[in-house]
Length: 200
Image (cartoon, rainbow, N blue to C red):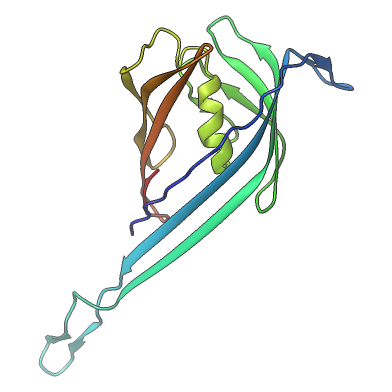
């Protein structure tokens, strides 16, 4: 199966704040983003042909290869608000965040996620993160952009069971006012019962 996917995320607004949530940890910083995303996933699957053994002749009848070739495509769009409450900063440059996504098609209730200095994310492995989180949160890693200049590129391997791939970062240009334009390309292959090749 193959599933190339494209994703565009538009970040429109970020508002820092500091507050104390009722019964929860102090919020060191509050970031709010308006996000829009679109993705297209195409899956190609070849089904093998059927064959059987003729009992009388002991010969294989039919073609064991070939068969039908099925293709399916799924597109999805989402728009909404992404709230990120930074509740802790670790000595090794990591962050701990409570994240909430409220979208038109995909939402996620408040979820605790750790953000490593290099942009890797730590969360419940049974949770499937919406694309908006997978592509926004790594940029909050305090060591992701720091120390890099325009033209620099680097890669971070993806981690997870039955997962191979990488996030490839590249600083495209200086946007002024301490801002830069950054490109993030993800390639991923999952094996096991859920075969998937994805590029975004």
